[in-house]
Image 1 (cartoon, rainbow, N blue to C red):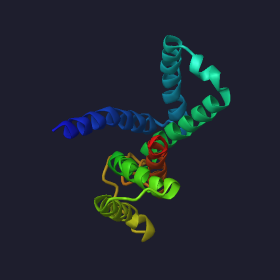
Image 2: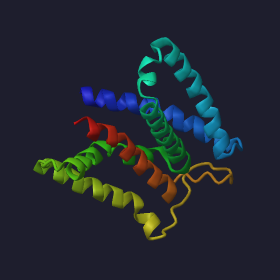
Image 3: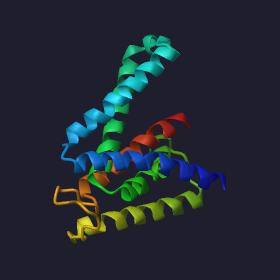
Length: 180
């Protein structure tokens, strides 16, 4: 029950983001315009939060702070552009695989053994990724299922959007694997 509520909260938090990004795009905004508009708001929120919480930890190791900020920027940009380039359901499916990527990173980086159920889950996740990318790999054209009004707003996604969603999930998994 608790897991379902957490999943519902996640979908409710991300759906308006995807909807607003697509709405801006349908009004004729280019991808850089959409990203700049979104991140101006995020910068304001983060500055207020930084002023409230203080900057002491950032000043202890500026190089680590800048690397962390650059990594977070890449992650956030990939999240934004994957929602612009593919449909939200596909993006969220691929991003939600981050716990399995963290397990895989744990095996590769730290030589941790995986339980059998995790190996089975990794196999199923690879199958789901294959199903998502199969139309792109076979070059099968999917019909446009939404009202794009001929503005290039394909609702069935693109290979680039799917790859960015995979990168976003992997970027989410990296700190999880580093903490274990």
